[in-house]
Image (tube, rainbow over all chains, first blue to last red; front, side, top):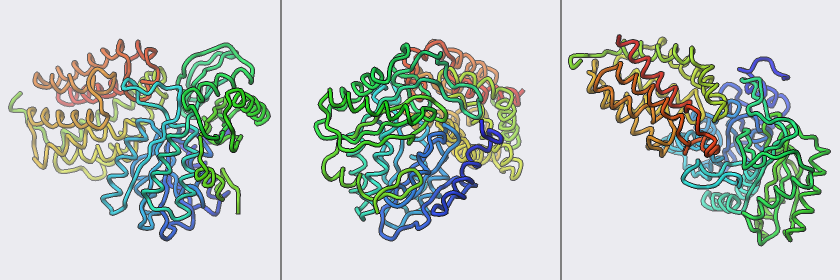
Length: 328
Length: 202
């Protein structure tokens, strides 16, 4: 691994973000990444965060048109409430703060505690949970569906609404709408290795793949012998479409897990489109790349978000972040 | 036992003993966590309790309640994950329930811990049998009526009894039936809390 020691991996990466992105204020000690012009007068502020290891999520999505602040935790460990409280104080203009939280027990608990503490300090806080992973059965017998690729759609689209000056209730409603309209499914070809452990976090023999894997290498629905890109696209698209049953055109995110080359990812994107056409799903926009990664996991995920004209307009609105940038 | 009165120094020794136990058992906890979680329970708790030890050394609180509140707050601020808020809430709520008494008896400690354990169940929306830390904490607090050694024993037994259970909360729940056959890491670390308590009371 290209690291110094496991204990400083997150701090070292933040120091790197600081030198690469002068448009961000990176507080390495307190682990908060803030857009430099925050607080933006009259604007609702968006804050997200979660365990590190999913870069560019979330720090790479801080900037005009997306997040106002991000709070990175240890690798695959949710941040602590102090980080979100500090971030809220830094970005709240008085128009309120929206927490965007991926549905994992640790993230939910830490963001909930942070919301209470920030409200004690006079900040109005709303929270939206992202739970898009169809591989998990959503029942009382699990922690519920995991938050994965849809996080990018939520941060981008709600971020655009906030940038236009929408009030907190509206930005929150847009975020909820995107969550409800999004589903994901991921596949691993090789497990990831956390710096602290130094060996693969799960055991996946070569020549096998895990269907429905989570972004921390959580187990999925089943393990199968290696398949072609076209076959994987069929399983993946079917899993998402069968659950979402889209009636509107969709945004497509073909997301790399971290160690899958873009060459393979583009080939996979072509197969995903082919299967979507089979399933008579219209595509509005397609994004291909490493956006919600899992360290060095090999594999990919597909996220679909069905969009009306308004959501599509917000998706197309300008965005200027380290990880996502267009328009203007 | 009824005349047992514990002061702030006892509670500092307890938290220091927990920190030592977590240090000692960190690799084992991480091992348990790699089977049904994400292989970081040992290192996360170690970071937290090391910070607790430092905080208590720097400014030893004057009352048993204040020791536990400081320990709980420190865990919330340093651990992250689900363990930070859950362990933090356990100690903080217990400490708050003890109030500002300079010495507490066994019965008061039991009442305090009962309030702490209830708060953990509330925060995690979980109950004993879900394969969580409650499976060690709940029987331990009940057994505290029979003394510290009984509580430690009940916590250990409760933790081992999570092996055949299917997880319904947290990351392990994604495994469904595949979570059966493994000891819950949170129950195992909760048992350390009571093992350390018995150790310093001996």
